[in-house]
Image 1 (cartoon, rainbow, N blue to C red):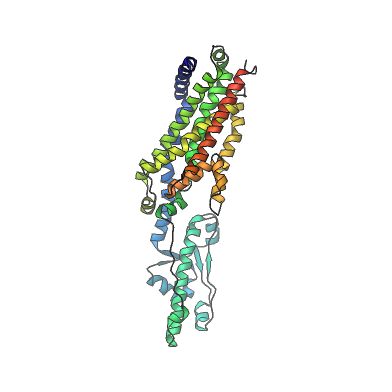
Image 2 (cartoon, rainbow, N blue to C red):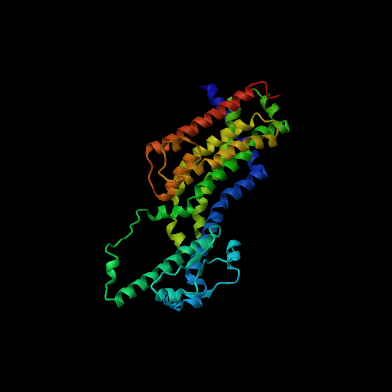
Length: 394
């Protein structure tokens, strides 16, 4: 018992030394500040600017038409719907491809009015570019507008023949969306968990590499190993310092979205994005074990490297895997599979997305990722201690 207490005291001494060195490192401090403190406001500003720009385009109530002189009745309908009709610029197709034109273009054929009088259906094109997100977003609005014109023409034609317009609509269809406001908001804010996890990963990366491969490259690891310390004591102190940096970034990142909501430029997004202290605390429940696990994993990868650059190259595999795994949840069209909870990074992304949707957790959904993180952290610490006991470190 006394030996264990002495070991913990020595581990605490190593921890204080390592955390002091980590916080003195400018790269680590810059990573903490940029990736955690500023991340929330910057990401929310970027999202709100996009949503606000789409809303502003819709509020302008403008429709760009090529050949509007061929369709006086269509122009009259647009104006009655309080839309301003603008002539399409020359070379509008090239402008749509280069994204300099933000609105889709309605192309009216020359025989538009004559075809309507003959009872034929003239072909009206809506020209947009799927790579031009702003024009693509406006295409649906213009399509609904043209559909309204078609319905009006049908109703007038039937009325002239003494037929009620209700004949064409024997069934009334009403849509009912079961998604809550928070769930609908995740269609826009669903990438926030990904940014938070990347902040934790890159924040722990510098500290993990510096305390292992960095010390070996500087030649400060061998004198430290010459001390009569149990290897687990040394590794526990180092791992605790790296995990603290990752956890600090997790805390700052999670709570940075609270003041970040003050800078939202879209009223619609501000009303839908319901992120408060409860959501921030749930983020921490998910992220803190992940920060501890990834810190141990990065140390295990870097401990066998002789230089900092070599460790960076080796850690690329971990970073790539952690950045690609959450995409499984993004591209999945169905419900979340149970095995998602057993995969680090993917499980955290799933759980944080559920937090943003306002959904509850059960014991299994929390316990499985926690157990996996504990196992990864224990395996990583054990591997680092085993490596330091070997003759490879000299």
